[in-house]
Length: 357
Image (tube, rainbow, N blue to C red; front, top):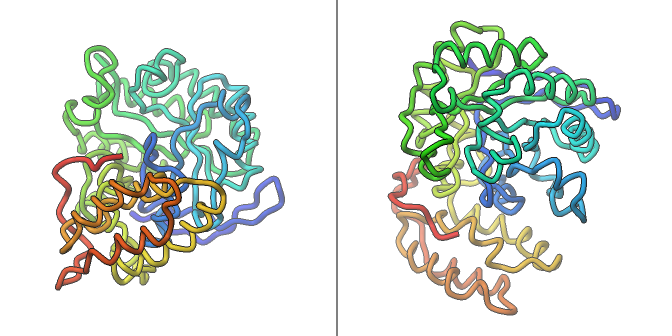
């Protein structure tokens, strides 16, 4: 059920953009889906829809410089900004700013279980306030022409995964939201840490599948625990799109198969070394802007997972990239320590543990 459209959408700014194809996206992840990770992702896939980390309305409206929160490289398109907030007026203002900055979509976070966002009525706790989410969606859509979408869970705490999710979707859809990406787990805001909420609540894919069956007019995407492109293809027989999170970060070579396997197009990288070398000009650009090498290269520590020399590659960067003056020469030294496996494999095994950030 791929949402493959080529119609042109006119923005209020007068710019024409192709309508988004959401078949595959990389989930917004705090501290992970930074502008540097997203630029790396583009050396591996041209078609995946990329999301920023969640940015709060307060950061956009009051933080300086705004470039720190909204800056990106043009290569990152198609690119969506995920907003955290609950005040309809502030969200509308931030959506308008996002459109002016050239983002292709603005997404409202109704799925993050973090304590620091609960206390400010941001994230998954908003599933308990569907009318408030609906008010925000109306205000945001009135302010922009780019799509306004929602990412949520199948429920929170003691909510009924059937009745309460159905009610939430109905109220927010009535406000005009047509695109929902659903993390197929509940968020337990009482008793579980944010980290535990990513693994402990059981996955319930059939609930998301039933949502699509009951609301065929809506675009329903699925997220949570998906680690291979084969799993993505299986999910796409039930829903409209798939969003992959941690696996796309810890195992970025997964993205190298996305364009061919899910879109039927040739991807930009034939090998991991191709991708790494294509990333070099971006690294130099960021270094020239004052960024530290380790802040950039931390996002590709998993690129050579399973390759001969992969551990030495990671160790070399982990031990030296933070040092003063570290630059492309050090990066090239790390690349010289690794080689491609004999058989090219765009679906390496899932990592057993997270990589160091």
